[in-house]
Image (cartoon, rainbow, N blue to C red; front, top):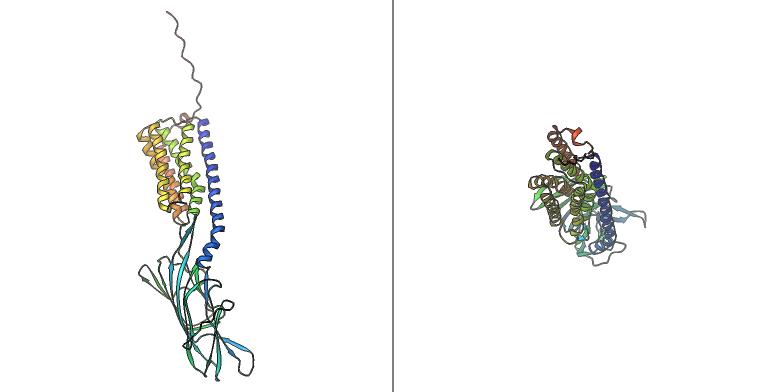
Length: 401
């Protein structure tokens, strides 16, 4: 192994890194263009983020004709059922969901006189679709259409009279469901029960944590109980994260040069230890075999699910590299190379399926690689292993006797 040959291998790894960066940029561009094209389409079919607001009540201020005073319901019991139904478009998954909403609020006339109480119930998102929508106030249903995203209903009530306000509907949305108290300063006797059809629950920052939770089938039953709260925060639930093929393929591609450096380092050390003479052109073909992994994966995910695409791409790359080294240096060397490629190219890439584990995986792999290389090369004479090859002196021409 001469210095020039070692520099050639480094140059091949650098050129391979450029090719991976170009592929990663192309994948990122495809994902961004697809998101611009499909986001509005999915939002139009399923609806945007749904934010249900607490109903607002109003009555005329006694002694001040024409002036309205707002107030909150006396109590509220809300049942919400969320079903995560993600939809895939191109290289992206969209976190769409369906919601069944049912609420019963108790409305009290807070004045000492008979009053007309006005209810304003704002729909979660204007323009979204709501199936089986029903609103009744004091047992009287309304068939009015929304005005500026609100359903309005009025009822004449006696002093201190309490009547129910009942609302139910089925809707669909994306990413997050929220229940807001933005127009209510004080919330009393309010209970919201949420049943999720999924186990991965994520309470967004700035929203209230449930006061009680329990497993229910494949999901959770979460309860928020506000006995008497001033400044109540929103109740919200983020839909579970779905691995996006475009995002995973892009990150795998950008980090592939790191895996190739580890893989080449093992090949160089093992070849020195075993006396296998690998030419820079051999490293060029090995780099191409590794590059085939991310290249094939980037385009298979358009046609196949994520894990089958990953498995097929990894198997093809392993067969290319292992088969090539088998013919070139024998079965023993090929088995070592296959183990190294599986560890650095396949397992490192698989760590991108799990958020937060990639950096730790690469760090552990680097430390283990360093330990193994230090152990197996401790007896190598580097002065002779990396000496420059001198031109051999031709043997003397024999003379006739």
